Length: 194
Image (cartoon, rainbow, N blue to C red; front, side, top):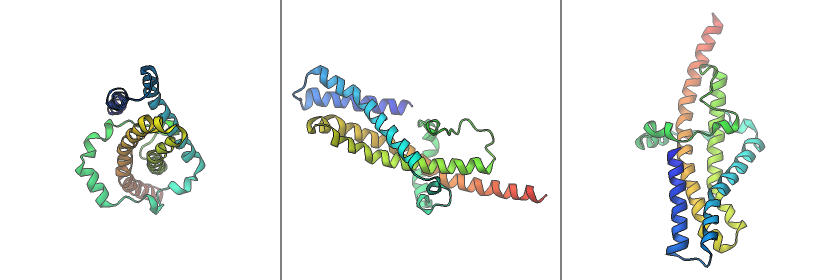
C-alpha cells in the first residue's frame, strides 16, 4: 500500500512542479492544484469502470485454468524470481475483495474448487491490469489537448507503472496454483477410491 501511495504522491508532486515551475501553463495556481488532486480519483474511477466491464462482460470460460492464452512460461517465472518477487509480492496491494474474492478469507485452502477459482481470478486480474494499462491512455481523448498532455498523460503513465507489479505477481502465482491443484486433485481422487 505504501508503494502505491508513494508512487501516486510523487507523480502528483512532479505533475504540479512541472505545470507550475518547469513548463508554466497559462493556468491559475488553484486550477493546477485542482487538476492535480483530481488525477488519482479520475484514474481509479476509470480503472474501476474498465475492471467491472471486463469482469462482468467476459465469460468465465475464457479465464479457466485450461485456457492456453493465460499460460506462463518457465522463462517468465525465472525472470520474476530474478527480480526477487518472492520477497516483495506480499507488500503489493491486493484488490481481490472488489471482485468478491480475497485470498485472505479462505474457508478451505485445500479445496480444489477454491484453487480453481483462485486461478480464474488470477487470470481475470492479469487481464484487468493489462487493459487498465492501455485504457488509461484513452482518457487523453476526453480532455482538451493542453490538459491531456500536462495532466492526464503523466497520470496514465503512473497508472501503467502501478499495474505492472500486480500483473507480474498474478502471472508468477498461476503456475504454482496449477501445480497445487494437480496435487489436491490427486489427493481427492485417492480419498474417493478408499
